[in-house]
Structure formats: structure tokens, C-alpha cells
Amino acid sequence: MAKLEYKDLLDAGVHFGHLTRKWDPRMAPYIFMERNGIHIIDLNQTLVSLEEASNALRQVVRTGRKILFVATKKQAKNIIAEEAQRLNMPYVTERWLGGMLTNFATIRRSLKKMTGMEKKMKDESFKNLAKRERLMVGREKDKLEKVLGGIADLTRLPAALFIVDIKKEHIAVKEAQKLNIPVFGIVDTNSNPELVDFPIPGNDDAFKSIAIISQAIGSAIEQGLNERRKDKDDAKMRQEEENKKKMDEAATSAAPAPAAEKVNEETK
Image (tube, rainbow, N blue to C red; front, side, top):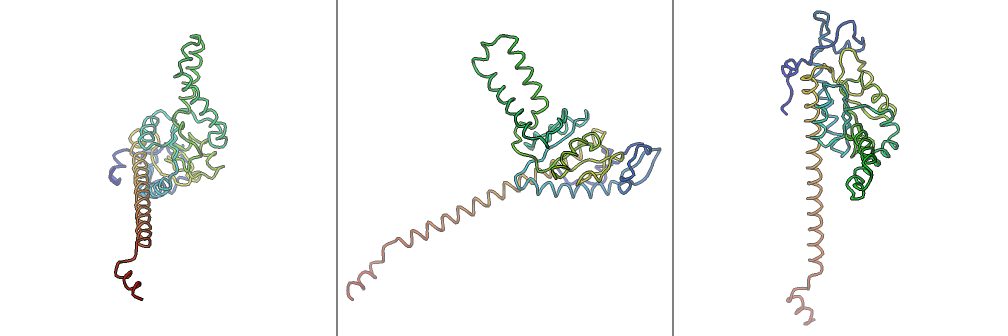
């Protein structure tokens, strides 16, 4: 994805905030003006914030850690799920379970239970169970998968969270704060930007606005993943060169002395 320009954000409606009566005064530094009773977000600030967030996220994924995408509002679900799946990152787009971060051990047990059910349903013995029992197992598995399917491969706490609408996802924000996990979030004019480490001022309700910001973040993460792969390839190449050098040195030291040297030794 090409670097975003002011016009791109303008066309996507990123600048449209909430009604002035619904604003959070702490968003004042990010507000450009008021128009027809609506606050207009300063898109120059959005571009700067987006670049800062992108650079930070790129460095995080370059270390091999995961970014957890969070968006449970209707207009953001599919965008976030698709972007997270594309990048092989965990995501939550249904309900945020209390303790998903702060009580991660319990969540891991639920994930193991879900995996166990999947294996059980594939087993031949499952077909021999009563129809009612098979239905109960299937429904429970579907229920767990709906809520936890996006984090099925998350084996440890994420390195950071990317959130659409920090006001709606306030529980996720609080849990991340308790564990000192950095939060990157789209912050509208009705939210408190001080609650997140990397606020990105923008419209968190419009589909186009959510999409353009999320895709920019996804592009930065993808760049970080590519850099990580390159780092690993470079490290592997250096290791191979070092191993070859050691083998050449070992072969040289183990080689027999030249014939001329042997004749000189015999004549002494």
C-alpha cells in the first residue's frame, strides 16, 4: 500500500468527528475546527500519528511478537478480521471476554478445550455417540470458536494491541494498561487519547475511515514481517559463510605437507 496522503484521508471521511456536545476535551489538540455542530479532526495530526504508530508496530513485529487486533463494532469486524488473517495475527471481533489478557492462563485452557473438541469430532468414535450428545459437543465447540477462534494460535500475551474505538473496547484497554502492553488505537473526538500509547485521531465509525487506517497499519506490520524474514535470511547466510570458513581452515590445517618440504626434511 502506497504512503497515505492528506487527500486519501479526506476522501475516506477520516476527518469527521462526533457532535460537539459529545466531545472529550482531551481531544482538543487533535481538533481542527467545528462545522455544523460537528468537530472536524486535524488530518495533519492524523498523518503524523499514523506514521509514528506504523514505525513502532513495524519494529515490534520485526522482533517476532504478535499484535492483537480488536474491533467488536459491526462496521469494523470484517475489515479487522480480514487484515489480521492476511497477516497471520490474532484478532477479537466478537465479544471481548473479561480477563482475556489479565487471566490469560484460563483463556489458554479454553483454547485447549476447543482444540480437544475439534480432534474429538474428527475421531471415528464420535460418530458412535448419541445424536443429542454430538449436537451438544458441536454447539459448545462453535460457541468457543466464535469467541476465541481469532486467538486460537496465541500461545503467549501479545506485544501490543491495535484497537478500533477505544471507548467501546475500554475493557481491553484497561487490561492492556494493567499488563503494560502498549495500545495503538483509532481515537474519535468522543474518546480520551491519554488512555492509549499511540492514539490515531480519526473517525472510528465510518467503514471507509476504519478501512484506510487499518490497512495502513496492516501495511506497516507486513513491512515489519518482511524485514524479519530478511534478517533471518541474512543471519542464516552469515552462519553458513562462517561454517564454510571454519571447514576450509580445518581442511587446510589437516592437509599433508608438500613433497618439496618432505625432501628437505630427509636431506637434513
